[in-house]
Amino acid sequence: NPDVVQFECFLTDCSGVQRGKVLRRSELLGAYRIGRPLPCSVLSLDIKGADVEETGLLWEQGDADRMCRPVAGTLVRSPWRETPTAQFILTSFEGDGAGSASDPRHALARVVDAAQALGLRPVAAVELEFYLLDGRAAAEGRVAPPAAPNGFRQTDLQAYLVQDLSDFSGFLEAVYAAAEVAGLPARTLISEYSPGQFEIVLEHRDDALRAADDAILWKR
Image (tube, rainbow, N blue to C red; front, top):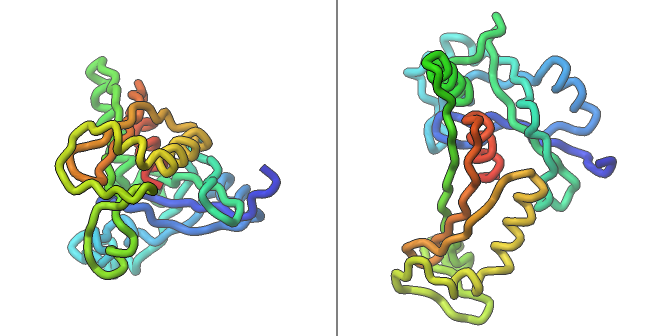
């Protein structure tokens, strides 16, 4: 991928929000060799992005950096970006090399380790439902279902309506194409209960961490 000039690298905070940096191509090898620092406070923000001082991860520690390292297998292109871009997931470590307790990925790793100690292997899959909204209404501060390219606007509750899948096929096919570039196992497409609500199911993995990484890349 010689055309890629920048890389989005990011953690996922406890609210499920991705936070990180954009690196230039010359910085990529360094990120893989030694990691990239991020302030520990990014793992203690609330859903609106405000500091949560009760976590003890802010001024008591001078908002100290933690070294964050790339998660193997998550470096993929971001085909929706006009500037040739790739992305990868980071995970946070303490100075002694232990995984940061406030990093959700390490929390999941602890759960997986506990299950394996009992002779169990977690298998996981993720379903992330989403809404399409009318862009003009949103700009005016209103929430409204989107109009299809043919002008029809669904306003009733119509679960599993196949016509919705046809009406928005252009957008939905672009989502599938981006998922394929990222190596994500996007499978069944469903028109959900509310107008403009959709779901694309990710196939299960017998590696719960990989399934969680799939979910994060899917959100991006």
